[in-house]
Each structure stands twice: as structure tokens, then as C-alpha cells.
Amino acid sequence: MAMAITIFLFLLSFVTPVFLAKPIHHAHHPRFASHNYRDALAKSILYFEGQRSGKLPSSQRITWRKDSGLSDGKAMGVDLVGGYYDAGDNVKFGFPMAFTTTMLSWSVIEFGGLMKGELLNAKQAIGWATEYLLKATAHPDTIYVQVGDAGSDHSCWERPEDMDTPRSVYKIDKNTPGTEVAAETAAALAAASLVFRKCNPSYSKILIKRAIRVFAFADKYRGSYSNGLRKVVCPYYCSVSGYEDELLWGAAWLHRATKKPTYLNYIQRNGQTLGAAETDNTFGWDNKHVGARILLSKSFLVQKLQTLHDYKSHADNYICSLIPGTPASQAQYTPGGLLFKMDDSNMQYVTSTSFLLITYAKYLTSARMVVKCGGVVITPKRLRNVAKKQVDYLLGDNPLKMSYMVGYGARYPQRIHHRGSSLPSVANHPAKIQCRDGFSVMNSQSPNPNVLVGAVVGGPDEHDRFPDKRSDYEQSEPATYINAPLIGTLTYLAHSFGQL
Image (cartoon, rainbow, N blue to C red; front, side, top):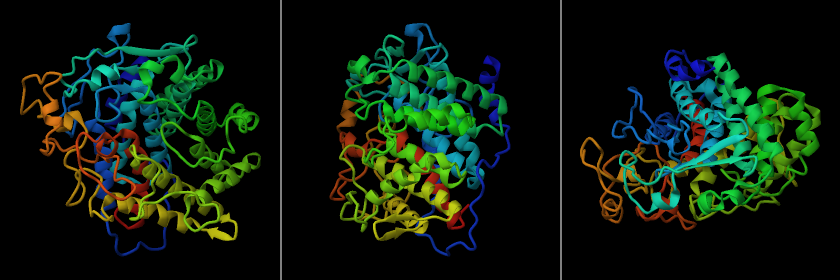
């Protein structure tokens, strides 16, 4: 098994991209698109190379980044080298990293068959994450969920290649459970196993075997990791929604990946107590209820699994709460038309929601069904149009005429809240930049010298304003979980307009 894991990335470089989902055929492509979705797709995947931790491969395309975190895990006698930095700092948080992996995988599962030349890059982005998650779950009933002390890290503004803050290691186990992060990790491994099922069957089996074990641990030893590790993970990635949503989400992914009746029975038996019918309409790294509903609706819509028919209703309720003009609509939009959920990193909800709309439209089309919101009928086409409008806003169709994806379009954020991007690269400044020395740059008005191509920032406020200020982490910080669901939506749009 160790050998299979070790040579995974080597083997992947020789794999001919395989189609993982049935292509979506259209009678014709629209003649005009306001955006180059294919270019945005390539850049949104490239971004993940700028977030890599560990020993970088010779194929690294964002070349201003260098090796970092090469002794991660040493503090606890384990190998935790690799994985991703979640956002603009140098901490590796396991909870959002696992969710990022799940969403990258879901994007490829649904739309990988349309990605063409970008499919291999997307798989490599997933593989970089799963290699780390396998290390983090190597010991039974234990998951290493964080590397780095966030408080110390945030007191410095330094490149990941220079970091000298404590690389403390934090774990969950039987005595200090963390059901949210454990179940999300199981979901990530299960979803990724589907990505590699055809192109690398042996690796896929390793992933699903580990997913089964990790989910069993999550379910057996229940408890919030925000309680046991509160001082470490809060306020950064506190779980507000509880762990029930992750258990339902994790079971849904294991059901999809294994087709074992065990998980279907689990969902039928526990669905209601785990929040299947919750009325919330937020989907992100903390709350998975909506994602689980959409995912499970496929079993009814596409696979005709009658026992899960309620999830079509649950998914429809979510759609009705989201679409403007329906009796149950609760969603707020900015004057410029952007879905607005909260001040901090709002764009993550834009990208996750857009993905769910595009994906649910796919399921509905397959089943030749629609959504009924009172007397209003919502067609799959309407869902796609709403999603497209959100993505177009992100790419520049907004009051400021600004793209919120770095490196895309004529105007995009220049001062993103990101240590590595904002400081001189190692190539241009080989000498170490000390912990506090970087704050002079952080507080300056100068543009970032290193372009983190493809990074999507937190985005504008509720009035469509964006100051492009480096210290404003709520609006100017990119994150892996903003990009991950966007990849699936961009793939669909690029294909729809004949760009792929």
C-alpha cells in the first residue's frame, strides 16, 4: 500500500485523461460568450499550485513559490509534509482542506468528462490533497487536523518558505473527538476515490478503504472538534452548524462511492435527526446540509432510488429559497446582482451555490423534471442562468467592472491578503524576511509582486464596493474552498459556449 501511495503522483503524470462523467450534449453552442470561461477554468485550477505546502515537483507552474513546511509533523513524530495552505497564511487547517478536496472531486465527477486538457491538472490538484489526507489518517482512530499555530502565524507576515513560527501539530482521537473534520475527511477520500477509479484503480481502493475507516471513527466517537480544540481552531474554523451535517454528507459520499446498502440504511435511519429537512440555505466549509440534499437527490432523480424521494423535495425547498421571484425566496443580492450571504469571504457562497445550481440542473434534466415553488415553475435552464449570472459577476460583469479572479481580465485585485504573493519571491530576495519585517509590505499600497493566478478573493460588500486593501482579509483574502466548486461551474459554462 505504501508503495502505491508513494508513486501515485508519478503514475498520474503518465495517465491519459479519462472521462469521468457522461458528456452533456447540446444541439448547438451559443455563438457569443461575454467571458473566456476556459481561460478562467485553467487559471482557477492553476491557483492550487500556489497554495501547495511541502516539496514542490519539477512540474510546478507557479514558479515564485518554493519548498516549505518540510518538517511538518515532526513535532509529533509523524510525516505531515504536503497538503495546502487554506488561504493567505501558512497554517494547514484540515477541516477546510478536506472540504476543498471534496468539492474539487465533485467538480471532476460531474463535469470532468468536459474538461479535456484541464482534467489532468484537476486530478493533480486533488491528488496533492489526498496524499496529505492519507498521511493525516494513517493511524486508526486518530486524525491530525492542523499543522501550525494560527495565533503565532498571524503575528507574522512572512513567506511560507521562511516561516519560523511553531509548526505545532493538533489531532483528534477517541478522547478528543472531532466528528465534523473526521466525517468531512471521509467524504473527501470517498469522493476522490471516484475520481481515480478508472485511471488509477489501486489508488482508488486505498482511498475508499481509508474513507470507510475514517467515517466509522467519526460516527462512533461523536463530539465537536470546536469543543476539544477550541483554543486552536476558533475563531478561524469554528464549526457553528454542528457535526450532524457532516455525518449525513459523509454517508452520502460513501453511499455514492461504495453502493453498499450499509450507507443507504444509515441515511434512511438517521437522515431526519442529522438535519435532512433543515431550512438553512448556506453551503460551505462549515454547513453541508444543502450539499447533502443535492447529492442525495441524484439517487432519486437519476438512479430512481425511490427510498430517497424526500431529498428531491428537500433540494427543491433550497432552490425555492434561493431564486428571486419565488414565494419562498429568502436570498439577498447586492444592487449589482451578487448573491450576498455575509461580509467575510462572501464569494465562497457564490461559487458553492453556483455549483449546486448547475449540478442540480444536470440531475433535473436527466430526469426531465422541474422545481415547483408555489405557482412558479423553475426549469433547469433557469438554474443555469442564475449560476451563469453569478459567475459572470465574479469575472467582471459588475458595477466596478472588476474581475475578482486574480490574473483574469483587464482589471483584478492587486493587493490580495496573501503572504507569499505580497512579499518578494525567494528568487528575487534570497535572504530571509523576518517575522515582523513583512508588515511594512502588508500595510503598504504597493501591488503584490507575485501574481497568484486564478485566486478568487472574498469579494465586494453588500453594496458592491471593493477597496482592494491588503489588510482587509474579509474581502481581499483568497481561499482554496472558494475556487474548488467554481471549477465545475466554469467547466460547464466553457463547454456550453463551445470553448472546450
